[in-house]
Amino acid sequence: MPEPKSVAVLGAGMHPWGKWGRNFVEYGLAAAVDALHEADLAWTDVQYVAGADTIRNGYPGFIAGATFAQALGWTGARVSSAYAACASGAQAINNARAQILAGLCDVALVVGADTTPKGFFAPVGGDRRDDPDWLRFHLMGATNPTYFALYARRRMELFGATEADFAAVKVKNARHGLENVNARYRKEVTAEEVLASPMVADPLRLLEICATSDGGAALVLTSMEFARRHGGTEGLVTIDAVSTVTPRFPQTIIEMPNFSTDSAATSASIGPTFKQSVALAAYEEAGVGPEDVSVAEVYDLSSALELDWYEDIGLCKEGEAERLLRDGETTLGGRVPVNPSGGLSCFGEAIPAQAIAQVCELVWQLRGRAAGRQVQGARVGVSANQGLFGHGSSIIVTR
Amino acid sequence: MPPVKTRLPAIEGWFTLDEDAPALLGSRCTTCGNFAFPKETFFCRNPECQGKEFAETELSRTGTIWSYTDARYQPPKPYEAADPYVPFAIAAVELRAERMVVMGQVVPGVGVDELTVGSEVELVLDTLYEDDDHEYLVWKWRPRSATTGGRADA
Picture 1: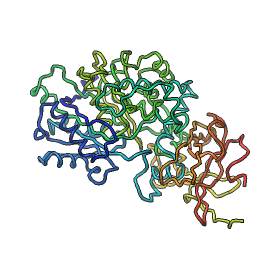
Picture 2: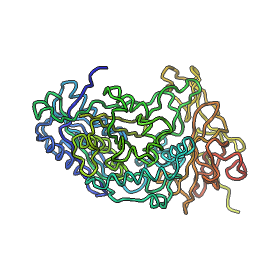
Picture 3: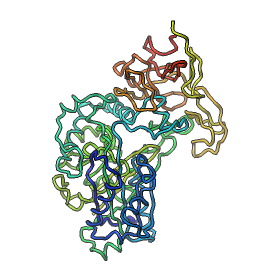
Picture 4: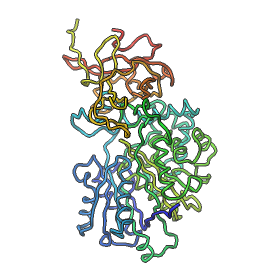
């Protein structure tokens, strides 16, 4: 196994998630300034800015890297802007990482932020009859929770998951996020409250489906050599893998925003599923395995989806996620806490910031600075996320 | 009697307008035989295949439910919801011959309590929305056990 190709994380920063209704740039800047402060670096030290795009805030959102660079004051830093739905933040991290590993820069700033409308995510405007995302709303009324619910029902049928299990995920994550100053929802909920909340997409209820939020997250990444000179390697946290793999044909699990899966009539579907392959590629790149993981941040777009991720990132075998949950293994204090930040359950989704926020949490966990939600002795953290159109990401952070 | 509205597909070329036995219109790669829905037109999705020619093909009219859910709240535009909004169920249906899963609304009046994974459904045409002069049709899934719902009854 080759040595992992690592970059150092010197700083992480976030603007609290909420429904603030202000310009997304403000959230991104607040996060960037915090990350730079934590890194003990100035904006003028940054040689490369990687922005994660938002598609709901006009042109400044499409070229987010430049928007943040201009707002911080033009310095001539090189720039990129990335969009990959929910995995946008991971793509921005990967852009910065590639520049550093190629020796093209030493210090990079990664920023993502969003301002979101109320309610269900709708496709962007216009009459676009060749866009599957537009068409799935028009022809089927299929929202994002529709797809989450199909997976949830499937778990119930295949593995005997119950509504009580799904509610227990929400109860756990709500408790995890209580002390997290960046979380939007910081209130304990009971299983009874979850199960009494309105059904949105059977079997998923309102309190089990993630909200859409405003928020911002940022990271300062540097070369290992720069990190050694800057502050030494004592307690240094590094990113050892960024997986952004696409599915393999035939992709036989229905995915947003599609009407159908690929056909497996001429080529059998073999090997791992898409979500499994996202994490597998990260483990392989980092030279670690699921047994090494001390903490995970996974994309709980719905409470049930968190259970899928336990299996997809290898914390347990297929069909065993409910047991893992029921045994408390994924609760703070358990064998491998999942979503100690409170997850999307407590944050809601600020799309371009979310994959970056997952890494912020892992970095703070590994540094022992996750006040009120600390996973003791965390050494290896893994994130996992999935977005529309075959996007996903998994990032491995170690200390 | 209200005037008869002209009935049009809500989208051109995605399904036949055969009222009794409608079918989704997919494509089949003439090189490797891969099925696709909606139709493939340019390059085969099978990465091992360089095919660029496709035959239109009617997909199986029946299948089994892979999973299902419903929409208790009104989806946002461009969904054209009736006023007042009427919730509907949605199913993802496995087609055996094509070995693919195709989503669609379930016919009105059939709720999630009447659906189970693995049960058989059949394709029908039904109204998606209407305006003053037109009724726009779309494909929907109807349980084989159901006795009502959808255009095949009309």
